[in-house]
Length: 297
Image 1 (cartoon, one colour):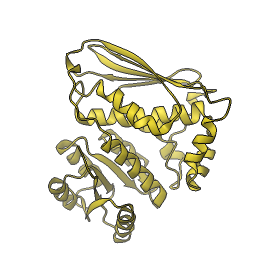
Image 2 (cartoon, one colour; image 1 turned 45 degrees about the vertical axis):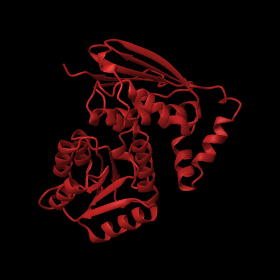
Image 3 (cartoon, one colour; image 1 turned 60 degrees about the vertical axis):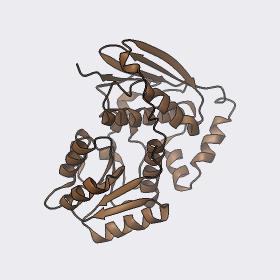
């Protein structure tokens, strides 16, 4: 069982590196630093961090090359790319190489802390108990969960237990992160009808937990649930997540790397999730998402 989280910062700008060190230090996280990709890879091999924060534009070995090397050595490592504005192509390339998220510069403290806390909870809550589900040729079940986001890591653990021996560790981490994003969306934006603007303001004011509680207890939401159906057969694993919200037009989902500002962190879950699955499809009214991961034959 993992007792604490180790972070590696790879950043060639001294001011940015110092800024990140201060943030991680105040958060009480263990960390090491490197000032270029080659040094970062050497530190990574010795330190074996759980999370890597790396700039993209660096001399000798850039962030994407470092990302590719890290994923080859320890694929379950969570890698967050640090990007400048007007670097959309680099972001997409990084996601294809297995990056788990990205932050645009200038980086805001609340954004980096939010991501680190989220991934810390996911890593610490991994269930390492090995099951015998690899012998199962067909398996399905349906869950109906409440809108209590604090229980979500345990729900995701249960979902991942079904596929731990079906997919590689890095693929399981990608599935875990994708399911987390989609189920949160189903609760927040679906059942609780929290808008992008409302969530942005709540995060800024550190009142998101209060907003969640208020909306959960509202008469129109108190009985709403999210249904998760899992189906596994010899060819693929598939998750269908359905909320009881008003829905939306999926064709109007914006591309976050083209529309979001540096201050914005949420609103990118759908964009990130599509890189973790072979198929991702919304129903016409946006209340249901189907995610499919094909097995390697």
